Image 1 (tube, rainbow, N blue to C red):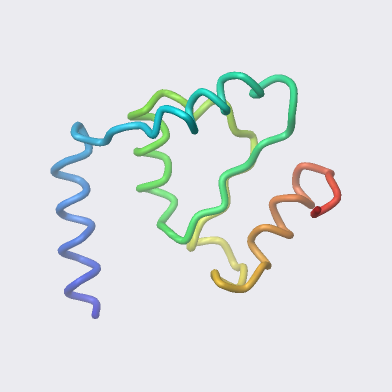
Image 2 (spheres, one colour):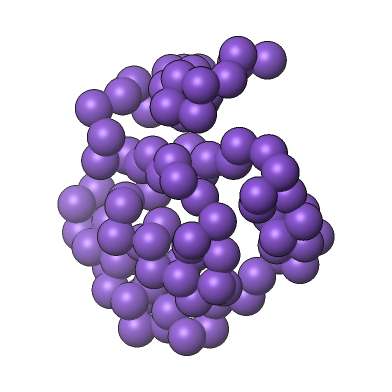
Length: 93
């Protein structure tokens, strides 16, 4: 399993310039970045989440970014979403 993860990370690092934004998601982020609290809750590593968000130019839209490297139970448990809501000071609805 460690070899698979290593290969995936090497591939992502090599192909980061090929990352394509999901336009409807970027539109929502850009529309609401100063109007609603938003967070990223990802099962990926912090390094790759940051690289991807920067590549599609929306990194600065999020004050809260939680990843698999944070000491939170991973998906499919709801903990990462509950923690994101806590950091944004919103009810987890």
